Picture 1 (tube, rainbow, N blue to C red):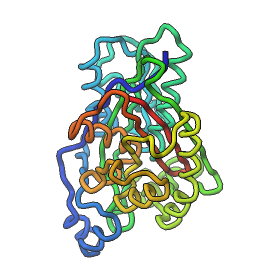
Picture 2: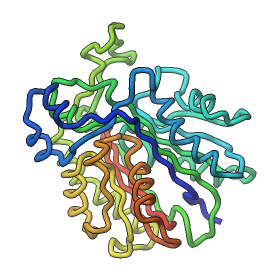
Picture 3: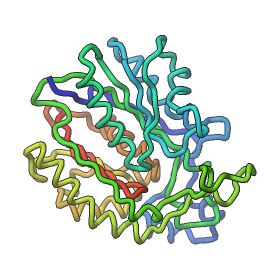
Amino acid sequence: MNIGIRDVAGYVPSNIIDNDVIAHWSGVDEQWIVDRTGIHERRYAPASENTSALAAGAVKPLLDRTECPVDALILATSTPDQPQPATAAMVQELVGFGRPVPAFDVNAVCSGFLYALDLGRSLLATHHDWTAVVVAGADKYSSIMNASDPRTVSLFGDGASAVLLTRVPDDHGIMGVSLITDGHASELVKVPGGGCRQPADGSKGSPETRFEMDGRAVMEWSLANLPQVVESALAEAALNPEDIDRVFLHQGNAIMVRRLAEALGVDRSHVALTAPRFGNTASASIPLTMSADRQRRGFAPSEKFLLASVGGGMTAGAAVVTW
């Protein structure tokens, strides 16, 4: 038996932040935002809705729809509720697992979901008495945005998503995975404060706890590195780009998705897109896009999916999945 994605769910807050609001905050024209990002709106969670609550909004429907016991919860996030304990422990409490199971966080920034997915696959393959693992991605980037910086505040929204991993027939499931981290590029995406190297000063919204990104350099790194990662995952799955039915890329922004699709040589009509509506939801974006695409047109048995992402670190990941 192989390990595969049996179900997927997504969750976004109800509060829509459109480009008029972003333009007012950052002092740029609405068209400037559309031309550079292709994003028209994003969702912000209220102050009372932390990352754990976002994640619970995606995990709970999976638990409600499955009859099999879930043996572990892995949460990918780069905006945890607090430094410790793991936000996954809080999600476990919120959704009511009913029994103690392993629950922990993974931080590979926007590639976090794919890292967590491979961990979930490995755990389920190793523990032969386990039945299912939930892998979630959730981020609340509205809590770390510099509202006066149009290069970043125009991109990010809040959201969560989750998948249920179970055993599936050998010709289905996760067929290939490739993951890399390039620490030489770790300065391209960062929140410098809040850790032991540069503790936050304790004031809410202090500058050192705000998100920073060199967008141009991130795009260049992504175009140079993601194709190799995707090629490796496809090779492990013994597939070619033309064999892929649907492509779910990290939704950094709509322009970035299109440029990466061209660099990967995949049919643009196969690429799902949610960035114009939800913006960049970081670790949530790939399964959130899968959930939205499934709601829109369903998934057919044996369809082949390519999941690929880049994130801070710099990190990149790709997974090939047969539904």
